[in-house]
Picture 1 (cartoon, helix red, strand yellow):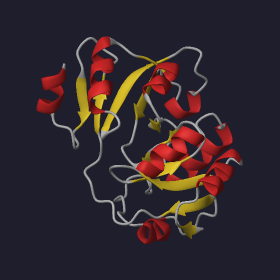
Picture 2 (spheres, rainbow, N blue to C red):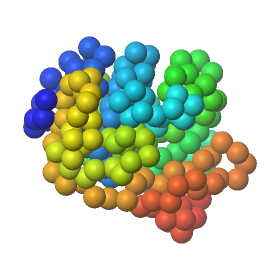
Picture 3 (tube, rainbow, N blue to C red):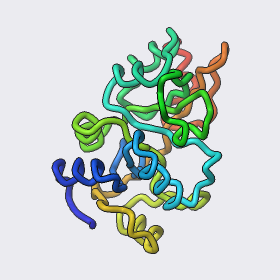
Picture 4 (cartoon, helix red, strand yellow):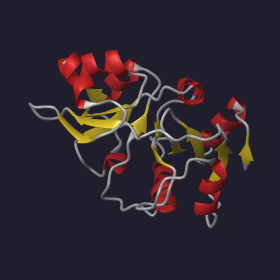
Amino acid sequence: MHKKFNLTDTVKALENGEIIVYPTDTLYALGADIYNTEAVKKVFKIKKRPFSIPLPIAVADLQWIKKIALVNNTAWKLAEHFLPGPLTLVLRKRKDTKLDIVTANQNKIAIRIPNNKIALNILSHFGPLTATSANIHGKKTPHVINEIKMQFSEHRDIALYIDYGHLNSKPSTIMDLTSEKPVIIRKGVITKKNILDVI
């Protein structure tokens, strides 16, 4: 269903294990409850993404990051400075975090807090979601809902497409903080200089 944002309908769909397409501060994302294994499997299926490639997640605030991952001083500085915003932090996953399908059985997880009012509203009222781009794996990411619907036309598993107009930002910068030396593994909106100025 292609519609304007309704929080109640969105939360209900997610609680029922359904998939949504929602806006972030960069591009549209495929959202599912990260704690619902069957819902997460649907995301992989819709994207035609190998299960060996982890999914990034989105959370509402810094406290959620601490619940899911181990946050060192560098990560905390970056999170406080840039989040919400177009930065994805790759951190060590907490051992008690049951998110193996999301992380492809790895001991690290990619987390971000998107600076978009609709995304933050959903995340605040529902909880963490998958935050992978709304496209078929390996294909160009569309910038508008109608193009996303065309790319996903064969799938009936997407309950809601939340229209936020044309989203045409660079992707988020991805920063791996799981080793001693931080590494930028994808260049994006936030530059290396921006990061070095903080850490």
